[in-house]
Length: 370
Image 1 (cartoon, rainbow, N blue to C red):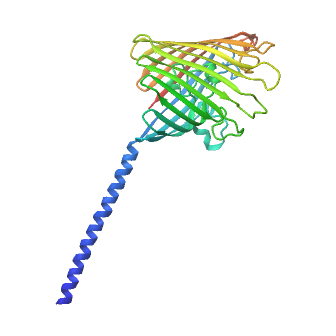
Image 2: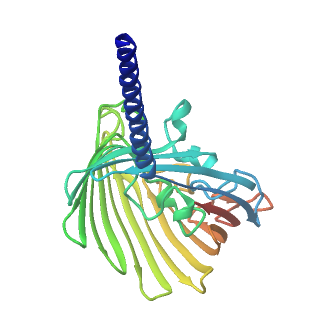
Image 3: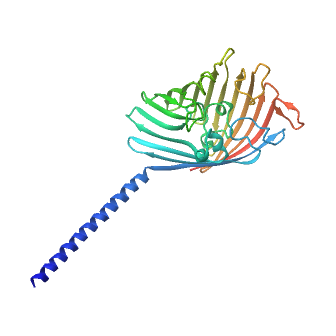
């Protein structure tokens, strides 16, 4: 009887311990699931897709006859890109993984091999305080008015200033919030468009001073440094001003001006380019807006070659006028536009295969963002 009672007691103790441990495992699993759920809830997914149709007016429709600006320069129906963005933000830290697929994405990512071609941005950041933010990794440029994603631009085609400025940088930057309206930024970066590594052991310094209010913003941007080996190229300097203001409830005016110069390696003159663009836009209804991009872009002393026509001294300019409509159907936007590029020297070819100074074209861009 005594042995039997002891056996019963041991069974009860074992069963109780098993039940308690089971509750512990379930509690741990629930806690783990709760932690994962909280983590997932802080990850945001967004992105876009786009494509377009382009046709020359009064010129042959082949890929050699197009404004030599980025992305929208193929003939007929063409694909843009698929853009997927994952971002995570905690109280102090976060990251952004911005991936692109397709022709526009491939054109936007320079000096990449293999799978890295899909990386548009990849960076982590640390909010050191309420006024200081440190970012490390690959991020899109802070210069210029336009950006890589077509959903963030009013016009579907891009300007010359955007196309021949930097697209992205890899390095470290510090953003400073001076007060509610003023901000500043300092950065140390690889040479422009070397987003995966630095083969030259030279670096670019970047800086920005910004002012924002309820009606608009203005940013003054700088970059300086060797874009290659010091024995092969002297430093490049660029200053860029970007601004945009809501002048009325329905009328917006943006502007961008830039100047870039590269010092000669030996005896000679500096070379580079400069330009100015205005972006007036008018909202006619909840669904439709119309806007004009008027750009003047000038190259001096062979600062760029094979982009616009140049004279014997290596100078030339282009005036590009782009009229674009934006018609919104939910997250889908139709962007029909007519563009006229006029160069100072013969650069294009008309339907008779004769050299000419102007090229007109039609583009219908389609974007969807989520």
